[in-house]
Length: 176
Image (cartoon, helix red, strand yellow):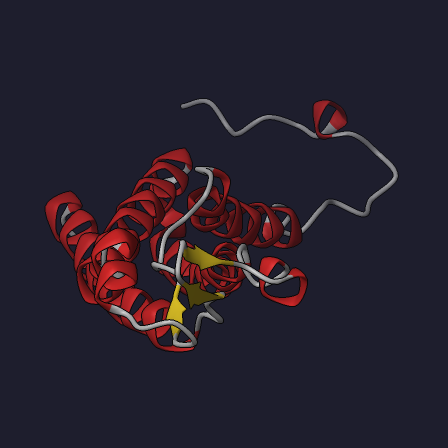
């Protein structure tokens, strides 16, 4: 298979996965709810525990997607040697960025404007966002882990000699 085709397939797979994962992140993330009063909005104790829900959801979706796709692509590209790891890991980084971008496009509404428009007693959802960069690394970790496990499990695919004598003691090929 040509090198360009291997890279193109990997990029397309992780682009599509990033779009689907970004949509899933936006749909399934538990968002904290601000309670609106005369002074603005505030988070209760229970709602504060949900503040980092989107980070956990992004991490879980990204890790699972990267493990599955990274394993399938690495197995398919394993004849490229160490370059297959680079292709898969860079593709996973692309998927992570696309996932974040799609999720932010679909679900990140600025909080201040929504709090100003709300009435006292209303509940306003916190914006969908990542609070640190580490959830984005879950894609990289998942893909790298999949590559490492497959490489470790198949690194001795060639049969190992089981005879007690070394190859040096065997006669060489005939010389003509």
